Length: 101
Image (cartoon, rainbow, N blue to C red; front, side, top):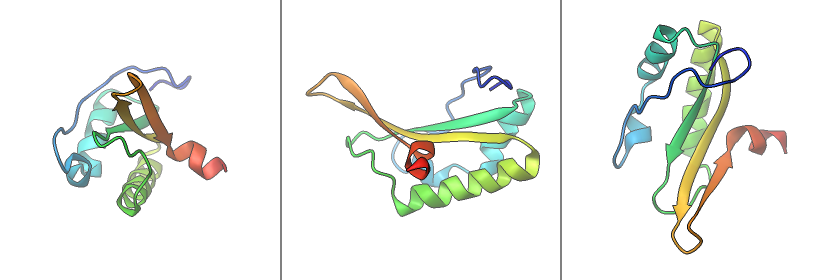
């Protein structure tokens, strides 16, 4: 993202089961640095429809947030998204909204 939090790049890092578990900060931030990003947001898909953040999600957020701080890149949000077939709509959970209360 640029300083106004407008997307400058979108990249698929991983797909398939356990994709989030296998995403390393170096993979994410290599792309951000090459794109000269000011800020990043991470979006993770959840096919089950359950968008509640797990302990693992919070650990990932902590690692990404710490790495972003070291590199001088703003970590804007970590979103979990899913499609609800019964409603034909997207649902999501935002880390940023969760910590805001």
